[in-house]
Image (cartoon, rainbow, N blue to C red; front, side):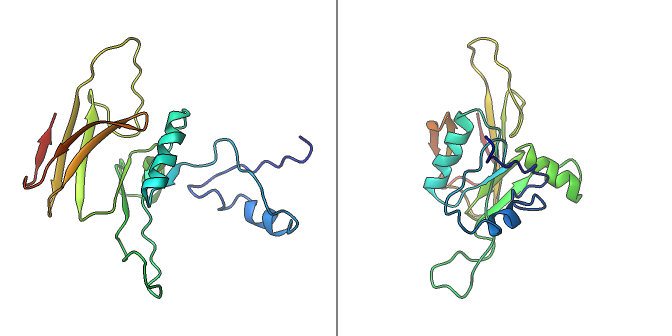
Length: 178
């Protein structure tokens, strides 16, 4: 363990203000390194593959919120348009500290579609909240979806496996599901 280096993380991004990037730059002999522990607050989903990685992180007991990249490289031929992938969070106030706290706590959802505002709860608990189950019982899930352009499907996943889906083609906003 004498070669282990620990960087305390103090922002949403693992490389910001941690010393990680300068350390990597000062060790050009390294071609591989491992980041372990509680090292991320958000997982940027940009494909089915990264979605499954996020599910695996959750299934290992990590509390990691979902995010969506909004960066765009307009000089490239096949790139996302600005705003194609977005993250929304439920913050207590419209301030930077409150937004960062909401994102760290996982009170987020990400989308790559048109403007959509889903409100999802399980027994009154929203995204990022922990539900303590002491025994096997049924839970009530409710979803309200507000959208301008409609939605094709709504899906619910448990432990990375889709357990419920419904076709919403042709339904107008708001869409209420139970």
